[in-house]
Image 1 (spheres, rainbow, N blue to C red):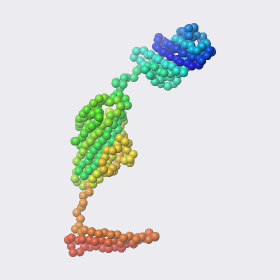
Image 2: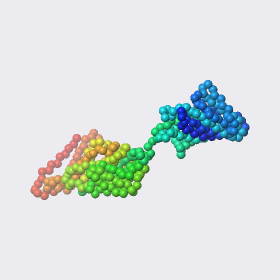
Image 3: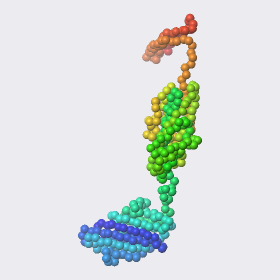
Image 4: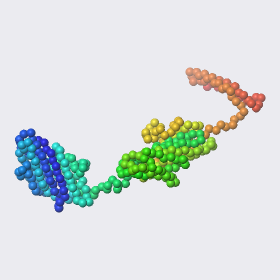
Length: 370
């Protein structure tokens, strides 16, 4: 036999009013017997009908109520019952006659919301109905959650920074991604340091941006409830000395639940950059996430990551400067090396030298064997 059910629960003085309707179908004519309610000795049935006639009910000592009736094709069982309890203090549990399919509706007093559990799990309502013909139902009244517009947004941010070191300047490019998990955002903010005065901020939904000291504030064209991505570009001149130092760029999203930052260094000139980055972790460039890739030019040299985006650091810039040497030029330097099976080696060196200032130079030839 097939069964479809609809149950409606409403608060009344001292408990809940239950109105239930079960449609029982059979391919032929036969008798049906099923447990209508279980473990409910205090439950009181107000009315119960089997089709057009009163339903036949039987209650045992444990409070289980059984219904019996004849089915010829289909019949409708309707029940109205009073369930004692206070759902504002403790969940009121019911064990109902299960059905193949059904719906459960629950109403709550003003200022409260129904919290329905079905077979021990939180019910997911579809248009205020729980689509279930489950046997076990528990209803409680709780304070309703704040509307989405009133709840603070929950945002996770990711920032990828790329710094390319040239001979005269460093060029920076960053990709900042905000993922909105709850609520919406219409303004974005970043704490920054080490960005040039020519900073640009672009994005598909960007209305404008303004720098307020170390903070960059970005106004969006429209509120965002899912994802927004920005791109930042800047440049900064570097010194011509053999050694100089600049700060690592800092881009830290503000008012976010969690943030990740990845930084990659590269060079396309002769200047070598050595990072000093306490609070960062060194990783292989190939392991950087997709949002941190493609932000540098030239040869990538270093990749770093951190959680939170607050750690600072600096770059030591080392420039190759030739030192003035003696006025002697070695035109040819040739080496011949012979080795033996025992590990001994014989090295012969041949130099062709030009001396531009003196008639002779002090050069020695040494033959070494070991």
